[in-house]
Image 1 (cartoon, one colour):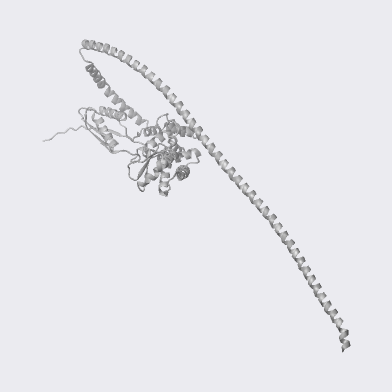
Image 2 (tube, helix red, strand yellow):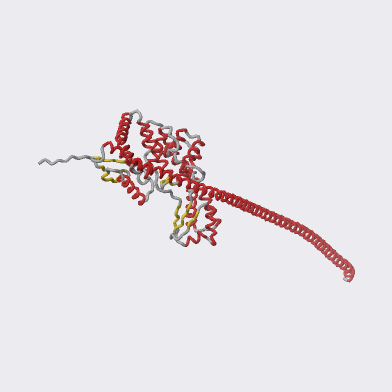
Length: 525
């Protein structure tokens, strides 16, 4: 036993030493591994931090570049806007300078004209004084000559004048009456040969124009408070409205109404629609006014073409020049003596077509001439000249038929009618204007016309009674049979017609009837 203990003792020591050495080596290896991992982790962390720092630097640099680009763009935008504003201000200054120059030039011209007028006035006054002096001398000489003649003849000037006139009238009245009667009979005999021409010429003398044209429109307001909103602060809104619309806005004491005044019917219609739209919308300010006016102008321009095309379609006419179609549409907004000009032109076209059909003429050409006869009224408020001249120019420019052009030129007698269709257009124009209700007329004008007709009729010698009948379209004159013969009655009707045409303004025509009735009465007892 002792021997075993002695032998195993060193072995156990070695074994324990080996175990201890192995444990130490294991710990050492583990420690080294952990240290290497820490070093590697440290290096990895440093690499990550370095990469993150580089990325952060890149992001900061990119953000700085973006900020500089945005600032540069905003700066360029502001500078561009400033340049634009400066250019506008420069243009406005140039306009103002030009206007001031024009005003100064006009003022100088007016001053020169005023001086010239003063000189002419002085010359005229001198001429008038000289003329009056000569006239006085001539009057004195004439008076002395007349006095000598009165002494020689034993009659005054008035008595001599009356004697001569009585002799001439008594001698010529029968001849004139007989001539008129013979001429009428001859016309009846030749009626078959000249029927078409006589009909057109007779219809042409159908009427004359009366009454006035409207130049204002009234816009209804929901309340008087709206007037203040339309005027705006310090008149800002109404100034913008008048500048954009080109009209005069009359705001007076009339309750809940504002008046639009303008000679141009298109501008007046645009102003009326714009005001109604703004009043309904409620937002009345300069920017909104400009938008609404631009929108309404486009609507009116579109509607003019629509009205013109509808008129051509209803009449069944072939295609027409676009400028003429637009002018026809503009006539929808134009009135003449209270009558819508486009409707009047369509009526004239229908009537001309009907009469042309009865006479065996070209109906489409007649309707075309009737529709375009007043086309000049679409631009006569913009271009200088009468509507007849302007209408003929438009028709020539559009390449219309010569008959159409002549119908436009001659429908008021400015130019001689060279075709039957031209006579028919003048007749239809008169018929459309003279029909009852076509044109406005005041009661005062109507009464004055009736009184004037009866007064003129009663001024003739031998007239017993005179009556204006059928709303002034006929005058019946009763004459005394013992003072007026049949031939003298015919002459009286002719003279009365001429006097009415010269002294009275009336629509349509007036029929003159001179009635002479002789009755022989006896009583059988």
